[in-house]
Length: 104
Image (cartoon, rainbow, N blue to C red; front, side, top):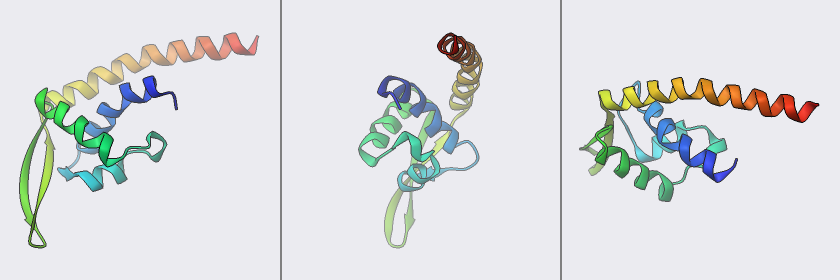
């Protein structure tokens, strides 16, 4: 997948992984579609950026004697997902234009 397209989608995919339940880094990586190739070195800067923007909050929980950092999506994160879905309809229109143009 093109890096520019992937970059625009990753933030929203991370938010979508947090939509139903709070989660932690490793699980988020496993929940995001493998086609995006999300790694720890990519995920944690994304989470930091999302936290700074108020889309997620972080908290720690003891798990198996160690502290694990969990992330919770805030309402602003859901709003960002909703905005993305609205914008995506425009992307589908562009996709159809490109696909039809390529078929001619």
